[in-house]
Figure (spheres, rainbow, N blue to C red):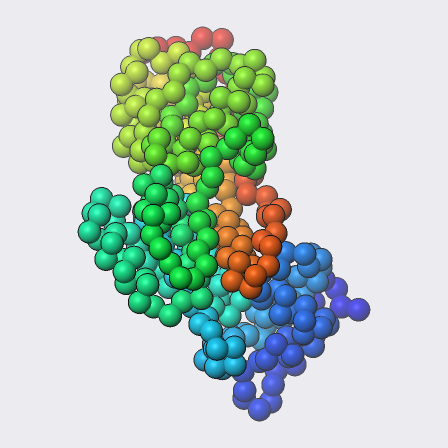
Length: 350
């Protein structure tokens, strides 16, 4: 039997595109297994999944959407509603969703909402209804967007792929694993007093990160010196920390995203403080530039592309009349860099 990542690929000699049967032969699996993978089924063994993925890539498999639509009599296009597409999280979720849809034989059409313009929202939703779609994926980042989608009426399956609020019984992986790991790292360095730079309150992701911060500190008996509000931008992180001036009573700053952490570090530098000698700073997301901040940023890496793949799988299950499977994808990982260091007995002020 071939190793998990090795496939026996023999290119077709007739010049025709690879079929699902070619992929199955190359991966050493049944065509039903390939079909299940393409539909987003999560219950495939990891070694089998790796062989299928390798075969799909080596054979450059592309589903024939026209033929499939003619055969099944239904559309193979998905409409994805999003906004704040310039933000790191929403952008990467959309990219992951598009890749997963393509693998499953669907095209993802992205529609961007302007949440500040009610007329534009209505026009976009009306335009969406005019398309022949198999389903709609609502990548809802804010309360306003969720409310707009929930108030709309569609005749095809709709899946709200936004982050739900954490509850007492249902915690996100970031709350249950990510922030505890981050706080443990800082506690092991001797930090006991923390400041949180929060994201905008209308974002469930921001509320969850604030709750995760508070719960992680409480579980370890650590002190929060306060929570200041930002809006995900570096400018807001800078201004929030700069406004505290000499009243900053913390040895570590936990920012809700990397951009606000970047702004916070500039504000500290302008106050004459060194990161991490005088104060440690952490972020969340691990944007591509985080490794090149001065100093490189300790952060929680979030696998947004995996979230995009998961929610496409959930929508496809809804379209097929199946029960969506619970995601088991680990979505966060602590990345330790040079912005965190051992706490000093006293944080010196300029």
